[in-house]
Length: 124
Length: 146
Image 1 (cartoon, helix red, strand yellow):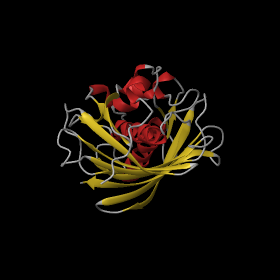
Image 2: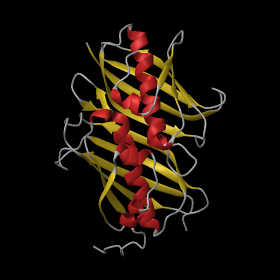
Image 3: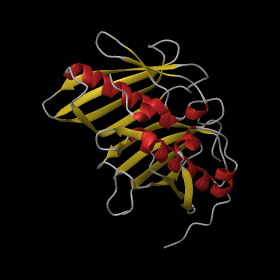
């Protein structure tokens, strides 16, 4: 997975996965919101990159252009001073549109700090 | 139409007192505000590109801009800085931002209860009548808004 400049700004690294890659975002001033907690925008950006990673893996190519149509994020817990992981899952892969979900967690994947749903337009 | 009274919360002073954070890292700045709305700006920068082939900004920084613009609109409506957390945020990406252009995000708090703030907003890159994104969301006060 080739990461764009914005992913570098977030400090993201990629852990390959069987169905989808796991993206890891370190804690730091650059992703800080209120003191001691991650910024909602940085969590949303991480979830979007995880969704795109899952979509590219499902498409079998990170050269296919995908355009975000929309994104809905639920914030469940504050993001603390530790690494955050996120993984996407493609729930439907159509010819033109994909439905993708993603979760972000810090300790356990079943204790997410945020979850998102999004639609992507696939430019073939 | 009755005009709401000006807010006791001063966003300009809030931005002057800001510490190093995601907002400063992205270069998000203050533009203007009203009693229950705020306009912030996100100048174009190459390290926020999401698609290197076209130079189009990633969607994440626009989400962060709208999260902040709507958060500030809540403090304006509440009349004070109140600690809060984003509960949910929905964004529609209407079209890609034009590379090189500053993105302007306007957030509005259209209802405030003791614990929940309801917000909406739009982003554009020069022409407010040709928006690039639309958001709707809710915030929750860590204690209470009033």
